[in-house]
Image (cartoon, rainbow, N blue to C red; front, side, top):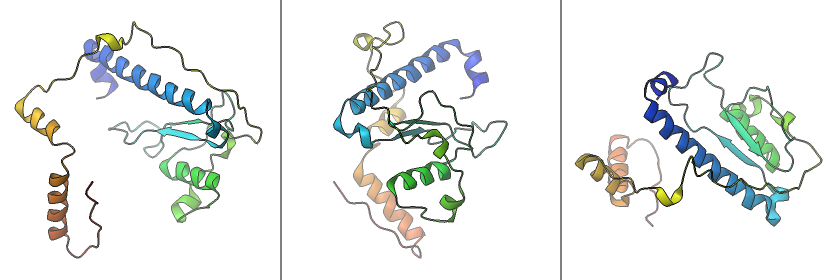
Length: 184
């Protein structure tokens, strides 16, 4: 869904705003919990998109939105470095002290400009839910709109179906080594 589609469908806009705000609320609660725990001094949380969903922008199709939370991140800092999955991985590897794992990581942008050597260990406190946007007491359970949607939802995590699809792929691509997912 792109911004033009959202502008046309006002109901969808409201729905998307609710989804975005509830996800941000959830992220705030996670950071609240982490920052009030003993592990906060050794924590860095990286939040990025998993797929731009046809969201290629006017500058570079390879850049990624990135939000980093840690006591070692400069407060209110906005980095102008090119952020990509490679640069995010490189940064994580450097924080873990393991160095680059391949040439792509080694050549990726350096995101160290957002970090400081002096930590701010003050905990973050999440704001309460804005009931005008989302009231958990009034939330309804999602219902499938069709028999196909119901069937798709029913077997979304069906381990037997996943195993069967894996075996089909192995038959088609028998020359490629792969490992079978463990059954839980």
